[in-house]
Image (cartoon, rainbow, N blue to C red):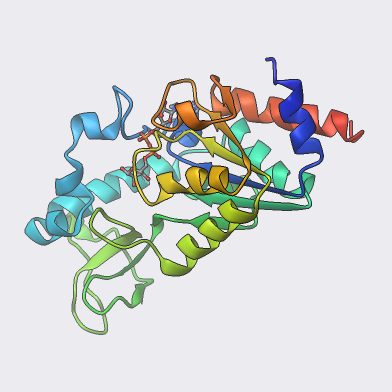
Length: 249
Ligand code: APR
């Protein structure tokens, strides 16, 4: 596929590159996105399943849904897009990967430093006392585990609608957006804040903004480069072109 020469030139001399990823990066690993026509929110109600109120009103329904999602994610493998992002850590003097995804496929693909804005679906903690929970999660007849310290209900360590993002993660992500030379927005509909604000912070701070997404999004009118391709195709192509330009191939 064709990557614009001036994007490759900008990347080749960039000191600091940042990337924000969304569910689209994991689509080619068989994990459904949220807002695509066949996405999770077309079938399930996010307020019932991915919010504090949803958990309080029906904890078993929320727990069961996350157990089902963990099943899908445990069997998923990173795709070439994840591996290309892991390679970017070594390709640029400074590279920051920021993700909205909770599937940890970036880490499985070898990315060493990942800023998780929306938590992760692998770990759990107590809804009451917040202590991390390391115990068994697959109990007989799907019962929700209880906190050994306070008896509270255990919940997945994802950020739900209505919750604040982890302060340090968001601060570091905003810092990277402010300081980078090139900011990638990859596989995200750019509809959920504050994550969707990051490419705008980057633009306001003078960075080149690149969108990798086969579809048009809320961010598209503001980007400097729009790569209308899937991440599993576009990202390896970008890495290869930059390596060639840097004489690494
Ligand atoms: N490659 C790149 N982009 C893709 C691909 C692909 N193979 N397949 C789909 N996309 C794009 C879609 O066009 C869409 O714009 O990925 C985007 C996915 O958008 P969403 O489903 O809204 O996912 P995301 O942007 O990550 O959602 C943000 O919303 O529900 C919350 O917490 C959840 O982290 C999530 C947040």
